[in-house]
Amino acid sequence: MGHSAHLTVVGAHQFTASCGTAYLTCVTVKKGSPASLEICYNASGGSGCTSGSFPSLTWSEAIVSVKTGKVYKKIVGSFYPNPGNPSEDTITAKKKVKNSHGKVTYFQEIQGCLYTSDCLSGEIGIATQ
Image (cartoon, rainbow, N blue to C red; front, side, top):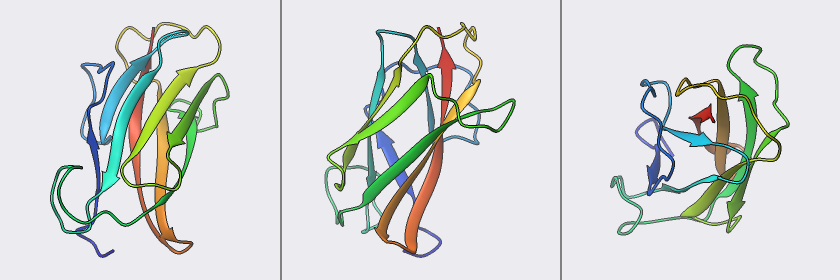
């Protein structure tokens, strides 16, 4: 996939203001109010998820605490379809989470793989309410 390959995020709902450049995008979640976004890899180099070449990817993810670097189980992510490209990524707070007041306190590590060794990855910042 080369060095110029990257994941594109479109249609994110529940944006948060303080994102920074380390993340593909940022979202805000709370119990009962998940965030959903469309993620794709455009093999033809375009920036959108509607026109170009979209090889099917197998998606995986983990939610990680910014502070501890450990996996956080109260927030979960899922992809549909999986495999697929584009795929909808839904980030859900399974339990009540502490309000971070717009600050990114978790991130979702995502990976889309064409083959087991040919993968693209990125991070989505998560603020909580």
